[in-house]
Length: 582
Image 1 (cartoon, helix red, strand yellow):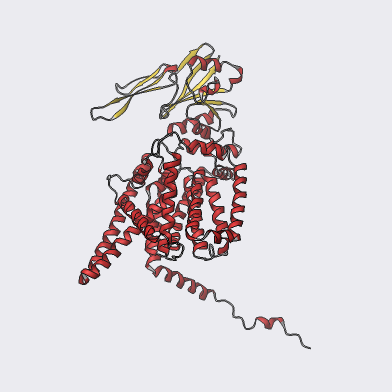
Image 2: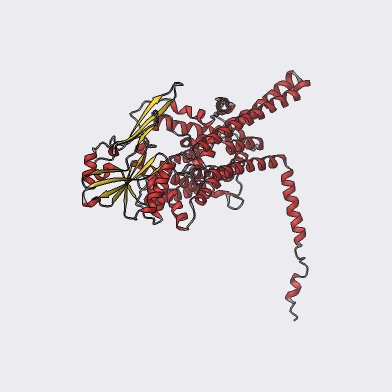
């Protein structure tokens, strides 16, 4: 019996031609870009990338604000730097641990910002486009929504700071993407994973979102209420993969709570719950903040409210039929309307803040805003076309194109002023708190790791100096919530042996809430009605800087029995003093 040569097995297989393969791929790419939707989306994505990289280059070394430094100083502590800063309970986040890992790897602050803020911000534009396609089967709607995400002034501004909002928002939008691709469309998730795992992956991403920013737990309720509205409860309960996802996500939730958070969920939630305050509609003003511009008028604001009314009416007319309807338009409107109702209900009825919060707190509702604007921008020309074909048939095309152009111009006009506002506020805030940054860096260079700094703003000096930072009341045993204490209390505390390592004091006029013996700031109103700073005073040093009369008296030394204060440096709005013991 003859054995066939193994070489013959492959004789009929032709080797791949690299040139042929290259041409095939090239043809696919060319074909993809020939699609006007793909080409337009590519331009929008490039716009989003260019804006983010341009402003990143301007701001990569900007000083940290209080809450940024709270996260970052704790990350340095976790990474083994010589600071013992512990993040405030409200800011507990896995974000700090990820930053600490980057510090451990020796990466710079700029590289960390690019990885954790800029890249997720760029991906938000990408995800928005494909998420809206999955939700609505409408590429035009997706293009408008992704353009608004690319140009949003607040998204741009927040992407340039070490805040948890952009990475958390990215994970929240990613959870929506997985939900619609796998659960709604029954497509392979990311083109790889069986859609039956959609709920498990979605819930896992929701828990990750929560772990980065606790307040974004709202994303979980979006999916829960949507599922209850679109499927019979029995069907939901019978699906074993829903139970797998629920049990898995609960386990991850408790693991994260145990390992990463310095404050329990019950304690943290109490910080935001204000039942003593009346229910008001002040949070509804946030949409004016989302669509600010320097001209004082932005059509996006009005398009949003009319668009919200539109999708609300669409859902009202579909009540009773939603579980039977398969129209993407209705199901998409339902989901994003639920996002709006749940988010605003939380702020209006639960949190009840006295004033309007920061726009980034309301990000769970931001995509709904873009969807409402996009829906209206497309519905108006479509409605006009239908009406004109009935009443003005010979002019219907002209009327349709006229309104389509008007819609596009309104979106572009609103987007342009989003950019203008972003450009103004980003550049205007680049040097904010620069004095505190420089003061921290000065002390880092001249001090020892065991030295202690006295400062009213604490996290920024802790981050930059990598030293322990205390407020005055912390060394003379006053309550942290009651900063009132005398200068004599402070001097007596400095004289005690246990406070021998307290060697520096930073006086910052960017943080006006200080004991009266440390600093005072006076104001006056000029002839045009503008309020300006008239005088800086540092009472314990007998230092006065009179801006109104152009006079200054800056003392270099001041003696108090066994304690001497000497001025080391002045950095912008910060005075740095050395505490000498005789």
